[in-house]
Amino acid sequence: MEREKKISIICFSGDFDKLVAAFTLASGSAAVNYEVNIFFTFWGLNAIKKKKGRVFTGKGFLARFFGFLMGGINNVPLSRLNFCNISPKLMNYMMRKRNVATLKELIDASIAIGVKLYACEMSMHILGLTINDFIPEVNKEVLGVAKFIEISEGGDRIFI
Amino acid sequence: MTFVKTKIQLAKIAKDDILEVLVTEGEPLENIPKSATEQGFKVLGIEHVQDKIHKIRIKK
Image (cartoon, rainbow over all chains, first blue to last red; front, side, top):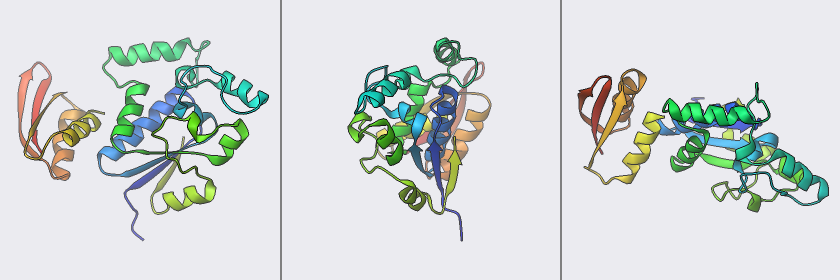
């Protein structure tokens, strides 16, 4: 069977550098006419939260506490040498200075070019999140494993 | 990312309009004309602007 021009990325890590990799791959693939799906699960959900800073999101005390600790896209840490979240800010500065797209620009470009974003049902359930806690570009259809397998069938699956 | 930005701008312009893209030498200069042609756009020309900057004219 011929492979489809389709890439489905499982975005598990909420690390700054891994998100940069995921969205660079997603936007670049979509630009050359690949169908691109990103399935955000666990820490990866921080990238698509509507509230970008540390706020109490979710239902229930523990979920809200975790929501606060995890934060949103403005709090994603570097996977190494994070130095109390100073490094992502330095990295953003260096990216701008060297005229490389920042994480925010990569996310905006991915959305503009038609990358489809999905949230993981099980992670949302654990963390007490609803679809309304995410940016409006996230697909309203929340996915479980079976549905992800179905939409990614015939293309490449990448775990980041 | 340069081609991603190019594609986004191409989506915003009307058919037969021309997009001018300024790129640096290296991968973007090689990749953009190739990818644009592959996707059915017409590359009208590449012009050297200054130092390592080039201008690619693409017709939608």
